Length: 310
Image (tube, rainbow, N blue to C red; front, side, top):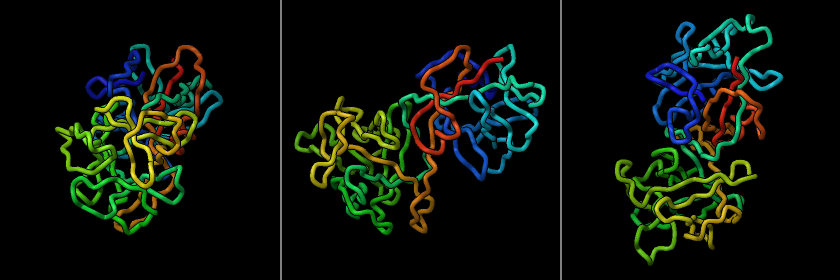
């Protein structure tokens, strides 16, 4: 698995709880940037070293090309097309001459890993898959305790724009882009059986802690569940997101996260999605593999990139 010690990119045994082994792959002007959303570091090359550094939009060494090969993909620096990422005997990733590999290029593949990844800086509309044309919003009401409702999509409604913060591998917080409000499960108040909005702090998120679960077999479909109220999720009952038993097959709970390109112009974002990845060294064949380049442009599902060891 691609891991990081200090700033050096190395291979290590798979550890599902180690955040250094997870990455998002972000499309950027014909290339890709590979970011760790927890450390806020980007994979880059420095000479022939492969390392991480602070995310920097002007650092061209953070741009990569993901090129298809017969068995998967090859990771090539976008500014050094004669090089490719390889793994040395000491377990360090580095660049080698692409021509010298003679058909033995390290291969990378993407495998669904069951964790949803989000860009903290991105804004989303939360589209209801069971109710076409509707999204989640707060009715343009800023007050605490307002229920989260199904509303006809309206680009001028500020209450329909949300961001997702990743507290760790499992916990998420959904906050409004304009109002100081967050999704809240109501805590211990027995009279509250619906999703509402309430201010929260990322240092002490309390009732705002959620899990966002991908729906098996459904592309771009997710269920929003309470982290504190185990086995409980939110599903549409009438026009309100009610607290119900967790059931990923219940399509009234299915939500898509549509990226918004520009809040200032209130334009709906394109179809490019982010994917949470881990990158691994492949010693034996794997099943259920997906090509990384196609998957990165279609879904936010967590995936694992696995490389073929030399």
